[in-house]
Length: 304
Image 1: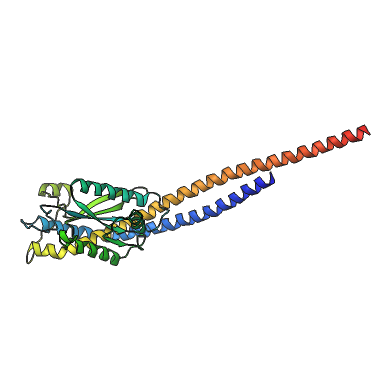
Image 2: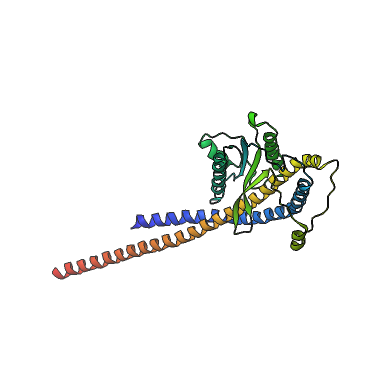
């Protein structure tokens, strides 16, 4: 009984130490979520303004541009997925990989090959373990991205876009990341960057929604403006996706660590109850031995 009680006490001590770690990680993730949300909110106005300018340039006239016009024949597409560098975030990275694999299979059904551009060690390790080709990889910053990281990723995607299909270039670009909606809800998103999906809006629809688009004049031409906006647009979309993914990663890690802390508390209660039962059984056994010894002594004394 004494050995069993020592085992329970050792396990309780170990689980309490683990609980302290998970609780600390939960608090750190909670504090970082707020900072990540602030960065998203700060970048949102520019994102909206740039998207509006690109949409206006794409909707102006009959300009044929690779930013808005899909090629007649597609042979290869870039799939850029944003995962985490570290674990302990529940199914955050696995959900992104699953969505990217579904997109890859969809492209394969359309006879379009996929070139994978990976952000985060989880995706890199997933592809390396399966010995699958990697067109580009970036790691080490997923929880706290910098704008330069977005520039590096965008340059890699642009280099593939500017390369002919016969030399391994791509005809379109897809981005797979986790969209942060609130502290409780984050969902994987598959977004096509190139060609841009332009939504035509009538004056009546704009007036009904309360969003009246500004009037643009493009010099020297809408095509030249699109050429200048292309790298800025890709960089900005990637930057916005990195910020949303970072906030989602912190939220997923906070949720996973809270669940781990709650499970540790339940395990501590269960082990404490078992330890008390073992201690009670040990006390009962000691009392029985004492009573049995006293009875034996009394019997021996009476017999003599």
